[in-house]
Structures are given as C-alpha cells and as structure tokens.
Length: 136
Image (cartoon, rainbow, N blue to C red; front, side, top):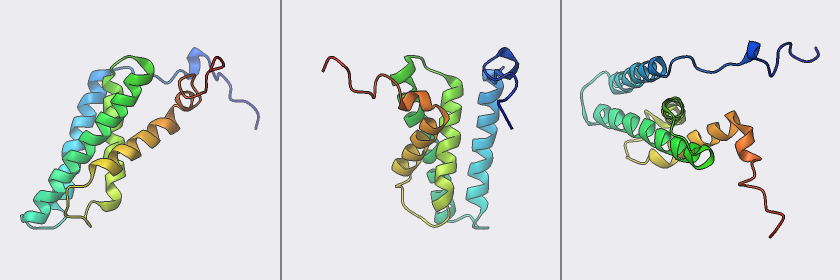
C-alpha cells in the first residue's frame, strides 16, 4: 500500500476547528447518555436514578483523569481534552451501566480514559517524562 499521501502536512492536519461546537456536542451526548441509561429500566425507580448518577460520575471521572494527565504533560488546559475525557469515561462505563447499583464507577472510568489518552497520544507514553534520565 505504501505511505499515506500528505502525511505530516497541512493536507492531513486533523485538528478540531471549533472548541465551542465540540463542547456543545459533548454536552448533548452526555445528556442523551444520561437519559438513555436512566430510561433503560422503563420505570422511575431507584435503579434508574442510580444509573443516571453513575453516568454523570463516569463522565466527570473521565474528564478529570484526562485533563489532569493532559495538563501534566502539556501544561495547558483544553476544552477539547475535557470533552475527550468525558466521552472516554462514558465509554468505559458502558460495560457495567445496567449491572451495578453502586457508586464505584469513578476508578474504572478514570482508568479507561487514561488508557484511551495513552493510545491516542503515543508521544506521551514515550516522552522524556517517562524515560529515565541520562544524568541519574
């Protein structure tokens, strides 16, 4: 197949063009995710309320984990990074959304968002911060 044409040039520079629309889309997605998980029981009971709470906490934990690690390496806060963390936390919560009635979604969602951050930015994994220094 060969190399991709235009790789590393402005032709294939896939950067987000509007942080506002990314944040707005993430808010709609998070709201819809809460409504879907809350209504998945077809009843308004304690389990549906717990599903909504767990969905909110999963997105928040993913957001906090992603932005904290992203800030530690880049020294910049990013709304796009926060939106990516929210989405990664929600995806990490999907596996256990209707099976758990406990509030223990934060560690798996945070860990899942961090693993997705490492997969999306391999330069962070191989950066100078994680390599042993030559002077030590």
